[in-house]
Image (tube, rainbow, N blue to C red; front, side, top):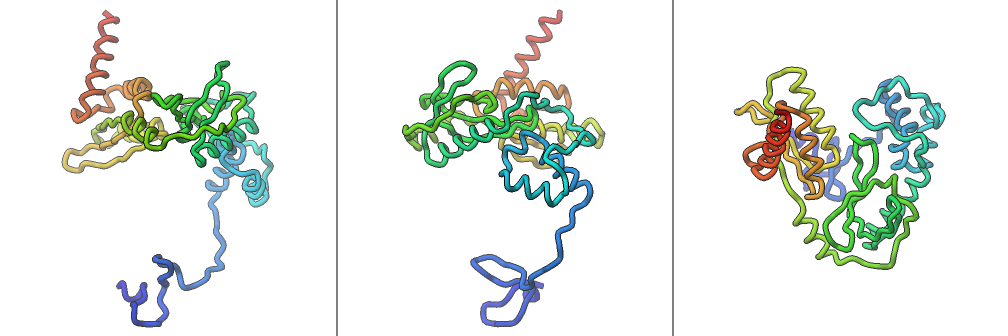
Length: 273
């Protein structure tokens, strides 16, 4: 009953929720502590020790987590096995990654270009956004070099980064990016098997860095996953879709990439003859 939980406009009675700043908030102040399960504590321990995850946590947050969980920052989390992802190199420089992310976020916020060295080459780009790739266990930068086609950079490989005074034209940037955004619709038939269930989970994992939506079509008994990607990601996207074999189908509603995949498969089969 709405009248029990939310206050009427013309009354001053006490209810479970109060209307404040166009939102509803509990009327009572709870002193009940937040209790974590052992599994949640183990995950937090892993988060504190995992190099890539640490880069998104402030040093103060890491210290507070270590104190609250009574652990060290080099906690042994070998009991948690991370599958199908790249191992962070032994020479991974966390401080360098933190500094790179800091400069990139500053540039994105202030609409400035950044210059850096990437794989031995000097680069100046307009940063667009930062992506976390769960599959490759790293952090990527989407950027526009000289306001042209968007490019993906691995932030681990960025050296000598500086924020320049050069400003971008938001209208031009948005126009270029919107032109490059494409959509593909994937279908996963539901047959209540382990393989099918894993295909859905693996799809969400592999394409975790993309904007996406997932629905279940009850009438056709299939999952529909819509992926939004940039044009420069298409080649890698096709390889990832092919890795699912017959468990994932590219919908007829996405004829462009469907035809490219058919051509790719035809080429592979012809080379096997």
